[in-house]
Length: 546
Image 1 (cartoon, rainbow, N blue to C red):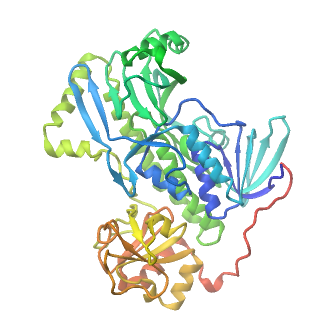
Image 2: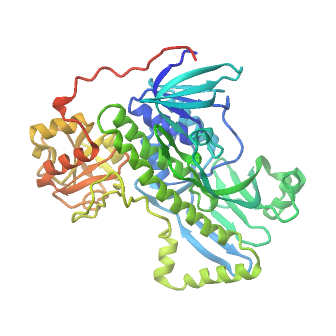
């Protein structure tokens, strides 16, 4: 197979995070090589839950809603043997056009992602290939790769993304620490089909004698996670006889089909930086989250969405390389906050003994009697928002519902010909200037318009439902069908500049749009249109044979 010897981005790891990175970079036309030491998909039980944010990122990566099977979860509950149900989280309904929480079958997701990667002409993949060395030389990184037959070759990349999991070779090669803790307890994970009395939700059985998360999944599947007790060995607990004994509570085990099983030990760790030089970490290579809030894979997808457009903008000379510093600034605090939440939830799921269980679970049950606190917990107010305190956005806040450094909501829009689309699909992989109610593009002076276009900018007008006046004479003009954007996000007469990852970069009155765009371009370090040479076609370098 002919593969490039020089590329823009080398992605190490072709799991779900690496595959999303490849899809996002491919969508921006970035010359990418993805490698993985495994010649085929891993099939052991791993991630099983995705939230609305993760589904929205998969949408950005090009996956259609029916690309892989999902099952919407109406609620998550927690049970105590001493207090009964002591907590319930409302996960029904949708946010930003996607269900709040779904379960899925990871091999199906990975197959869909890999199929989509194959549609990008600038992305090549190499399975059964392992990274052994990295050396940064000036403006490139030299990677030594080893094939399955033991032979080696080198690849020159402008940047490297390590999405190669918790035991990341990339992280070790660049010398970053992986601080945190490993839980002392082992857990048996069992996926089964044809369960006689299936559930339709997610439940945590918080018995200190054997905590057991239990959930439903697509394809007639259910999953159990059994914590091993003192004296039980991974080998003993994973036998068919032991699994049948554990599952007998939910029906005749002989009627069930045990599809997959594995014994894991959970971790709570985060790298001391997500970047060193031209090398970046994403997903489990950068942080590992205990599974108690279902945010492990979700956090990795957030990494991908945050990083990939920045790499693309720098590689396409639309922004200064300094914007890449914001990846660590924005992502690491949020990843750490999610790990902290998972650890707190873990203490509820696996209390040390009966006395601790009665105290903690009893307190949680009392909280349900206080309406404001009960609502806050039930509606997932405890979940850290994906909103940045510092990063690549203009500091300050104007008078609107928008928050700079926060994510723009998504809604259903109707075009001139009656077609309906989700707003992210309308914006595409662009830096977007949005005029709410008014046409922001019509107010741009010629030089600012040219500079914004040279920076990959696109102008879109969002009209409130039924609006007929002030419609843009040219360009994209869409009607908001459900008020998610106007007036839900911003009032009539407002403007916002939104990054390709849908983070609000800048906002203000549409009458000040030239200032807003100029300040945003300065922040990005974008060149002026007059200084940019005509762009050449961006093609894959099909150089040396790997």
